[in-house]
Image 1 (cartoon, one colour):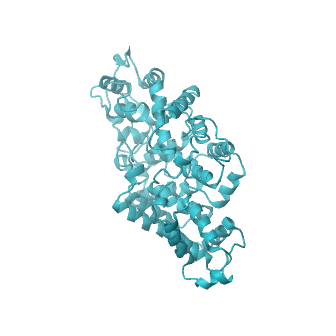
Image 2 (cartoon, helix red, strand yellow):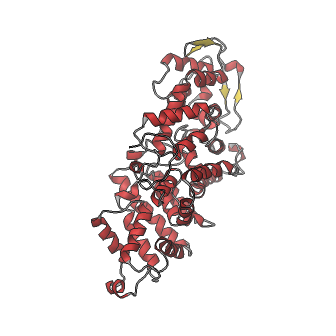
Image 3 (cartoon, helix red, strand yellow):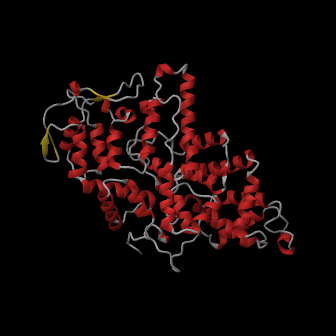
Amino acid sequence: MVNTINPYQPSDSKPWNAQRVQHLYNRFGFGADWATLQAALSQSPIDVVNQLIDSALALSAPEVPYWALWTYDDYPDEETYFQEKSLFFQRWVSEMAVEGPRSKMALFWHNHFVTREEDYDCNAYMWSYYALLHQYAFGNFRTFVEEMGLNPAMLIFLNGNFNIASEPNENYARELLELFTMGESNGYSQNDIVEVARALTGWQINMYACETAPFFNPNLHDQTSKTIFGQTGNWNYQDVHELIFTLRSDQVATFICEKLYRFFVYEKVDPIIVESLATTFKNNNWEIAPVLRQLLSSEHFFEERFINARIKSPLEAGVSVIKLTGGALESNYNQDLIGYLTFIASSLGQEVFNPIDVAGWQEHQTWLSENTLTGRWSFCTNILYSMYGFSGDMRSKLHALTRNLVGPTEADVRVVTEALVQYFLNTPLDEPLFEVALLYFKGEVPENYFEDGTWSVNYNQVPEQTLNLFIYLMRLPEWQLC
């Protein structure tokens, strides 16, 4: 067991191999195709992590939809409003297969700064919220928090719009301290919540017209003294954040780094690692990227006990099918496929823009039940079949993948099956399960073909054999882990 945040240095006992590369891409994205994994193997772990983060930071801002500033009255009809909303849900899911880390981080923050589209019900607010998640995915956390509190989606969702001097509303103040910055009962009191709510009064949004610009109404702001964390003054919105990030910096740093640890490493937090990350967070003036660089390039992150120790979310399970088979390289997705992926992920409990409540998806073991497990089997199988059906290139991609894994002349069916199992699950199977996997891969190919030299990795039916094997593997518990 290694409790150190020191950079990971590959060794004979802890090599930089395909399994660890895949572990990184699974956690910091949605998986990777064979060529990406091979390229990473030729670099150092630290260089790969830095490259992933630098590439994400260099991405252009998301393309602004034509309706980004539209009010309700700007839509020609109700059908257009709902159609654009549905397509935008699908757009984000489609981006997950292409962008990787930025979409993964935006999804993480979506489950931290939770809002629900069903509650604010305005496409322009949905866009502004999405844009903010992407803008600060690797940016400055303090600025992120300050901007999020004035985001139209948040002002509506947690009733900031109704927080006025004559009738303070505590909803946003409570979640600002409990869920967004410090953690439950961690350095604040109920009276602090009351006083923070008073300090935040006066910020408004014209929610009934779906207008996007928040504004401050001084007539609705409480101009009297408030006492927050023992400090008394006529505090306002900016003052609240200054008090949180100065007087409660330790609580903020620890709470956020614990969440990052649970998401990227393991649900049971290692306090020694978190303490180191929290120090980095504070020393870098609340910049998120340095914390991620430190965590994801650490020897702790690459410990074998953390590989395949986290249950995939529905979106991770579905998108990873696309990534592993090389489908993310397609120049154009079948819209029906992305629509299906978005819809079924929602039915399995993960609808983008609509986490279950203000605390978000609880993840890990909560993703699985008797009902959702069987749903996942059908979900992933249908994605694979759909890709194979609509893309004429997918058959050749599966054949190329199999050749790449074992070499262009391999004729040992066990060697080929072992390589495909390791690639798809990122772990070997116990012998009884492997024997079944071998039968699925052999499929309807005559047994004597494997014995007399007729069959090799170049055999014409290898793509169908690979497809058949993957479908079997997606029904195993190992597939649910990353």
